[in-house]
Image 1 (tube, rainbow, N blue to C red):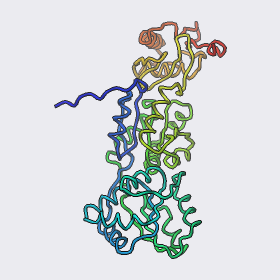
Image 2: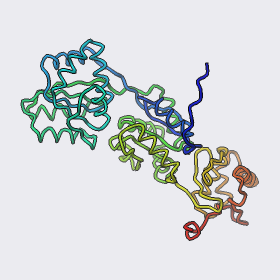
Image 3: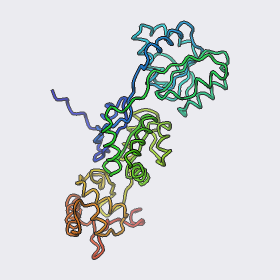
Image 4: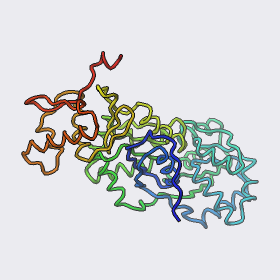
Length: 382
């Protein structure tokens, strides 16, 4: 039986191809983007492997039940939920809840706090920067000597908290609930970085720093990282992250990503919708209205205009010139197998004009080439 179509909420992402380099909750994220008109490609660069050592996790859980912690450190929402699920499967959930209820619980960011609340517990303090460093500084300032601390680690494990607290005299019980594993479809990751570098993607979304780092590493291995950084800097592709920690690997390679105001998937979706639907994408003011590029064509005066791959490349070359003249020879580079045939350029420009429905948008400059019919700054401000 065919599933009923999802209701459309807006056309803000019409024409947008969006890569989600996400494993957990990827279907939920994709559905939210599709309701605003996006075409979504899944390319998680890593996968979450839960309960990597159930015996060790359950043994540590029994230790905490027998000798309750005074402090509980929660570093990730998915990890804390996984711990609760593992305890439930072992028949220990009620006893663990009772052991944790009397402890001081600190969270590394809003997602960790949400998981604590979902478990029926209360976070006493939250590191708003979402960093382990801030969390560690807070507890050291409070004093941890002689205190029993349970530390639930994130997937990469090496956050340094165990060593920090032990060096300050604490009794630490360490819990690693999941780890990062290889991508479920390495070929999809390769295709996604190549397509992004070639201008076939409008946005790439990340929800974890390790996932972002591995996706960028895949781009580097394919020799396209510099192209992606260049497109991001020019505004031709949007890189968006769920929070500042996730943004770290992007910033490290010279990309300034869009960071969701709150560390939630819903906030990430709203940020992307606002970017493309709220006039924040790169644009030109033309005689036919505001013009924005999409990987599948253009948005002119608020309406998506589909174009062929060649038509999109032609329009992109004109767009990048900002109203300046682009030679026929330059435009030939956007045409597959055109050789020295300048007539092919004329035909391609004619097809762009026909598709857009505003022939005067692309002006012919005799003996020189073509340009977009843009407004000068004074006209655009009227």
